Image (cartoon, rainbow, N blue to C red):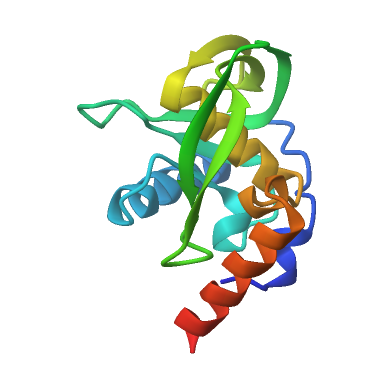
Length: 158
């Protein structure tokens, strides 16, 4: 939970995909579904590796597992979306991000792939990549809005 310092610490590169990494991904998907949410980054559960899962599908069960993801292209067009985090329960804010991104990542087979994401998928992927860099969605808000939101989150936590 915020303000845990791990949420502000960049995660370590994964490198090789092992059975241990696949087990972490499986746990992350289970956690994401239980929240429920459309994405989860490993630092959100205290695992300081560049791992993320995203499932913004309508039917669920379409989770994409990413290791060492990086945005390699982003559209000029933007999307506004209400974002939240289980690490800051009970608060959310509208965040503007590129509407489409191309991301390079290592998949569950250990292959380095590129994939295009749009809509909620793009928002969630960018949100998770921020977590892997030690940033949260509140960092994309104005200082005043961020302070109000964090104050509200602090009150809810008490």
